[in-house]
Length: 116
Length: 113
Image 1 (cartoon, each protein chain N blue to C red):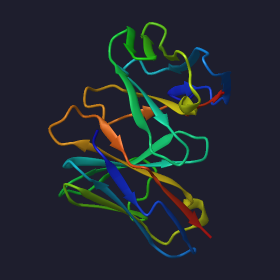
Image 2 (tube, chains in turn purple, red):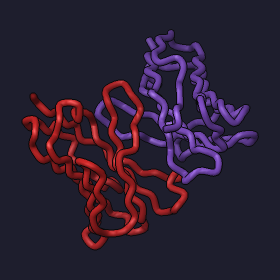
Image 3 (cartoon, chains in turn cyan, yellow):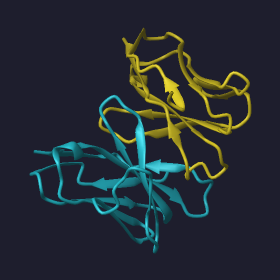
């Protein structure tokens, strides 16, 4: 199946700093990528939809100025958490849809963010 | 009320048991139903994808959809310790399932050898 990677897998940062998380489709082109947030023992909450070459679409309640998304190519989307706060600590998961495929989402392994 | 309800578990069963995982939903617009398996500290992986009411079988896994009751199930036969994971149901109103997936909270399954 299609492989999606995320980097880093785990990051610890201080409050007030910015953290960038990368999501890559390794063996396919992805016109659309999604960013989710998952709290412990909770479901995945969609944060935003990222389309290559255009602005991301954010879900209600997600601050676009805090969670910057850049989908610069068909294989890479980045999520930058700006001015990180301990409340931003979470598991961030991206997914990608194979261009020309059947719309199945392929999920990355996730990134554990801890803000001190 | 959440759109999709799923018992968080944990559900503990002995190896070889038949496992039943369930989700209920309130939005009658949901037409496409998926089950994902998520191992600890990993991203979800798609197990089953169904559209119509009825059963769909894939190896040891059977997905069941009852749209009239707004109830879906995943059955795992001959459960193995390697099946221990969190199982998430997900639903969508559109064929382009990637656009708007609504997830259940996940059920943690533990299969003991």
